[in-house]
Figure 1 (cartoon, rainbow, N blue to C red):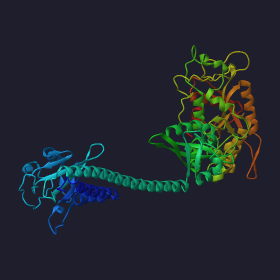
Figure 2 (tube, one colour):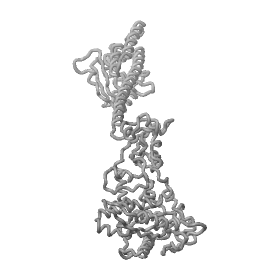
Figure 3 (cartoon, one colour):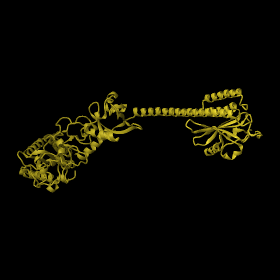
Figure 4 (spheres, rainbow, N blue to C red):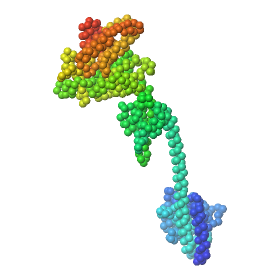
Length: 619
């Protein structure tokens, strides 16, 4: 290309340049593109050797491709492959070189600018004779930049086959070629990045499909119930996906469950708990309605599944069957608060119910009267229990249950205690079941709650207990209060001595049944122990309490046939009255004293001093 003034040579050079540029664009990989660059510089532009140093991600430049016109058996530029030069050394070299347009020419007398870490190979060509002859230590560099101006690499060429330093035409051709090479390298890098991104995407898609399949199998074949609830959109709160285990647990089909929400299925008493649990993404034990109308105890564990961009998307709920555990819990709770023989509330439960009804509010001005003593009605928390829905069926986790049933003695078969598993808040023996801790009206509280209505003694002085010094109800009409009827069986010891303890136990069970049949709905019948029973009758007048005592006596006195034998027992009763400001022991002692006075008046045998009555023993 030394005869650059000849148009023919220039045209041949342009044709060659066009061909090598086409080869650049035909390469299908970054490595192929780099190889096309060095081969094009050698075969198309008339140089004996060429190398491309490519910028790495860390900024340094590595020799990525080399080519020479005549390949040597050993040595040559190929030894440079893979060698790395620091970016700062390259920048210093490019700054020290002469600027030929976009090219950089480094004459041999400026070798001091070449850093020791820059890969370098010196050819064995002849030394220059004339000023424009090529020196073996001369260097011609063509920096290649991206469209954004970032350095992509450096194309280095050596030893023009003409032996002369490149003229203007060759320089221009090299500039054009380096520009096309930078475009080709940028495109090749982009294609490589796209291929890597596509490979990563495909790998992620495969992992996602595998994860979705794993979740589907874990969801569908889980041994316990699973459900997905939407948190947004028109189907918010609706079950959009359920598994077979949940369908079996609730006895419902998938299609019917997908048209409902947990709020449609939950027991009314557990609705607030479910709403709070769903909002907090936590755990709750509650009841869900089965297809047959019964309620199933379950444990719900909620997990909110959130999207990184949109936030919470849906609620994943794990539904565990805890029916057996709840039944056992209710049975244990019942055993702790009820008599094992008769199924009646025991002494501890009796005291607890009295304690919930009484308070220690001061009497006089600002005391009971200020809180509605004249009404003598039940505490607002007892009102629901005193006026519950009558003899009809009460809801329970195992279907309808009547509140008047006397449970069978504990220790029977599993099917004998279905009525013991009562829902929270239902009525058992006349009083509502309460949580273990409830800040309602109770003995010893310094001040009653705002909705508490004090228990007061009716205005009839003949029925007032001796220890009572507080106000009595006034106003027109009979006044009502909380009556405590202490019942002690007469002749029970002879039954035990004559027929044995088994017969005595059967008598106690029959007496318990008769007492419950004689009381009003909402009254409590409790067994203190031995042959002593106590009846709590709230919101009752003095005359009504006396009539109740007659009904109780008439219910107990008829003979009973047990194991083929006829047995008979009597009963002594004492009516006491409970009022706020009295202690539980004062209430029971007053009723016990009245019963003892009646027994003595009727000539009944005393079983011990009043201070040793059985209601003072721990039951």
